Structure formats: C-alpha cells, structure tokens
Amino acid sequence: MPNFVVGYGTLLYQESVGDTIGESAERKLFQPVIVKEFKRLFNLLPSHYNPSFKLTDLPVERAAANIVDCEGAYFNGLAFEVDEKELLEIDRRESHYDRIETMIYDFATKKPIGLAFVYAANETRTVLTNDASFLPDWIDISWARTGAYRYGHKFGEMYDRTTFLADGLTLTVERYASYLNELIIKE
Image 1 (cartoon, rainbow, N blue to C red):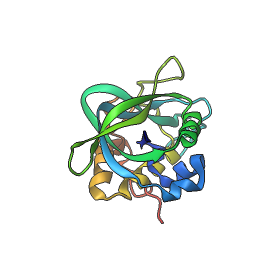
Image 2 (image 1 turned 120 degrees about the horizontal axis):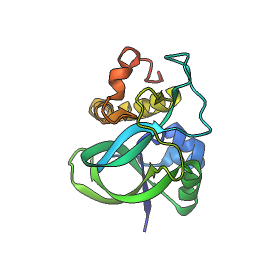
Image 3 (image 1 turned 90 degrees about the vertical axis):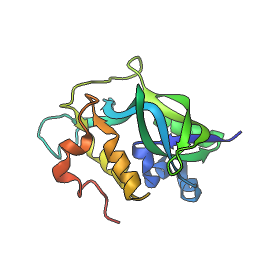
Image 4 (image 1 turned 180 degrees about the horizontal axis):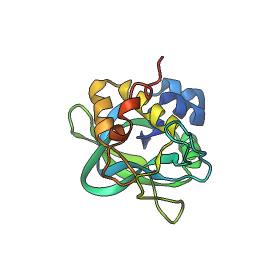
C-alpha cells in the first residue's frame, strides 16, 4: 500500500521536499488537499533554528509550522506519495514531530481521498509556545506561501486564511501584512 505525506509548511515548497528526498521530488505528483480537525500554527521552537531578524532585532523569528488538534478547523496542504526510504528521510527531517495518519480530502471537490501522514509536534519531544510574540522563521513562511500560491490563488488564499501565529488566534498574514509580496519567492 502506498504511503502519502501531506506537506503543510516548508514541504509545500517542492524544492524543500527535494532537499530531503532528492531528485525524485521533481517527478512527484503533488495533489492539493484539505486536512480537517487540525489547525496550522507557528508554535514550534526547534532548537536548531536561528532567528531570521527580518522584522525585529529581537530573537523571536524562529518558529516553525505545526498542527494541533482542533475541532472544526482545517488547513490545506499538498499530498504526495513516498516510498519507504523517502518516508524514513522525511521522518529524519521532521524529527521534532510525530508522524500521524489522518483522512485527507480533495481540495477542489472536498470529497474524501483516503489516509495520509501528517507531522504534528508535541511538548514531550520539543518546545511549543502559545506566545504570539514568537514569529515564523522567514524562510519557513516564504517557502510555504510560495509553495501554496504555486497551486493557484484559491489555494494560496486558503493557506493564508488557515495559518496562525503561536496563539492560534492571530492570522500570520495579519502580522505580515506589509511583507506579503516579499513572502513569495520570485521565480
């Protein structure tokens, strides 16, 4: 049975997937999907992240994307098939997260597709925060937004509407309103 992974942060950016699994990423079909009952937020503080210092001189721009259980919430992502070796490479990359299986839904039709893996962090393995003064790492948010908008304006807009700062209340695009054009990599 094939394994599917849903990228919802930097794994939305095909080049980032390629950094992990190699050239096979270029041949993958990335399918826009929706994952229900989870909220996407930048509340993970990986120990290996250094602050990006794009918006402030304070060392707070170092949060990574994560998802948390949240009844009624949803987010969009890109599902792609991986073999066992690729799955292990992604597991290594996402070592701050637990790999969990969940139902995914087609972005266009909203109909269920099947099961896929998502990565969600928990406090026993890493540092999580609910302090909205921590901001996304600049590369993380620019790769994610670029990857999302590559799949169309509607898909990109849903990314913006379903991505929050660490408090789970403040939309990331509200905080970054003056920088949205800079957060799309020009190709």
